[in-house]
Amino acid sequence: MAPRESGFQFGGRLALDLTWTLRYRSVSPTELLATPADLDEWISTAVAPVRQLADHGDLASAIELREAIHAGAASRIAGEDIGRGIRGLINDWAARPAPFRSLGGHADAPSHLRPGAEVESALAAVALDAVDLLGSDDGRLRRCEGPGCSLLFHDSSRPGTRRWCSTERCGNRVNTTTYRRRRAGEQPDN
Ligand SMILES: [Zn+2]
Image 1 (cartoon, rainbow, N blue to C red):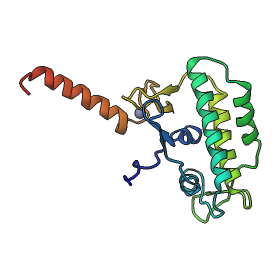
Image 2 (image 1 turned 90 degrees about the vertical axis):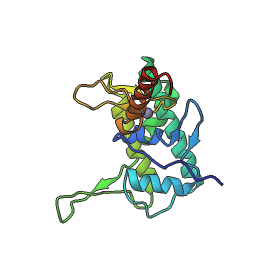
Image 3 (image 1 turned 135 degrees about the vertical axis):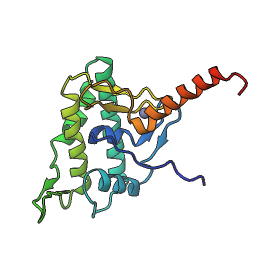
Image 4 (image 1 turned 180 degrees about the vertical axis):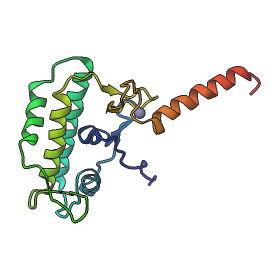
């Protein structure tokens, strides 16, 4: 079996980070949430540590929510209304008990998943972020222009002119390609 794709990546918006778990959506869809254990790992990294492990039903719910968020965000980017079914699904998750935070001994306040409803509360947090993100119209929700990437991202940079999901990944890739092409043009013998 070939080693799996590099793993999860995070861009700072919980709702969009969940949509990033299906990579290369437009060219060669690669599922990073293949098993309930993958979902545990994603939640532990993105939201808060999981103690009560996810099951297959949780995985199906997470993927259903992910696809609703992606469809809603794609509608926003296209300037279209978000369909009623998609809104209903996101709103239903957003209304569930979200994680809570507690004051730590130092300058910290970690998040905790709701005991007995850990995955549910993690997905509620994701859905709440989706409500914030899709409920505003700041023109900063975009699709990455990196070749074959198509990840959705929210540009929170000051100038607001970001074109890539991440400069390190797609920005550099584009710049390197441009550089190579330019070099190739300058040195036709190579
Ligand atoms: Zn990208």
